[in-house]
Image (cartoon, rainbow, N blue to C red):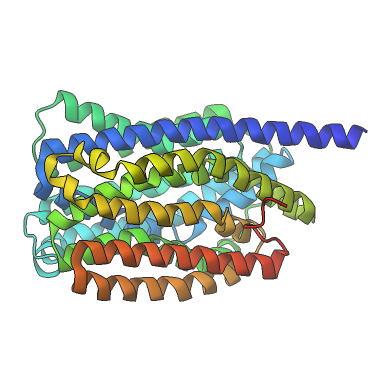
Length: 431
């Protein structure tokens, strides 16, 4: 009876966190939507396209700089916090943050040094040069901020994690765009970089205040962390290749105008899968803790319940975006309405993403990072090749189709991998 009551309490806590996560992620999606509207309307299609290209390069550069430590930190902090070992959590965060300082500074420095060559020779957009220079300044701070937000997530500070990662930076950018006379991608990038640096400072101070110090445990060796993280680095890069890679390839082949339309449609379609992100924020630390206890039945139960929860919230959003795509896209400007079909294509891919459940997180939190790396490598390379071919042949529409097929293929393949390794079929959640 006591065990059943404890299980019920744990599930109720997780459901509560999921609802809070969803509400916050919905808020962040709304803010991102509003900021995208402001950017596209204030800068215009060409300037906003240049900003989005620079932003995409910054995100993938930051991903590389973090060395795949995201899920390692999330999993280990989740286990430490679940056992109230706060000294170990603090020690781990310090170690991982020190590990990313050098690579993030190197990557940022290289982008700053070769910004003109990248802009003029690769993208044929010389005006992108100064935008890249300003974006490069934010890379070390963005890498550290991301690790802090992941640590908050692992420590079950869901509210703080989402506020600091998804609401504060775009919120600052949006307010600045409304009140300041910003008209160029360079000016927008300066404000973005400031928002990242400011949020990093707030996050660091928030972590010190919110998380107990505890007794410092023996630090995990850098070698051990890298052995665990390097497979996940490739996973992270290839996963970003489906979204960021499409933007970069489209920018090289078609130019800033097409990138602006694609990114706008992509950001709107992501509203559907924000339920997946919200659930992952709440459930990922619990998956890690259950696996450390060898409780596969608990993982299976959480996986099924999370998929039901996500679909319940995602289907209405999918229907609205798919039935009224022209109206939704016209909000960004009349020139965006004719790319409404791109929104519909991307929405179907995001629904597949939600229906297959938290397959990537399940593998990452249960020490199957090698298998995850191999699976994502196969689908990621296939997706990027398809993006190159279809973007060259059919432009914006081809890029949307290739990106959507790649995302769907990756998730369906991971469903098979999860079934094979954990015995959980995430798409049979109704049983």
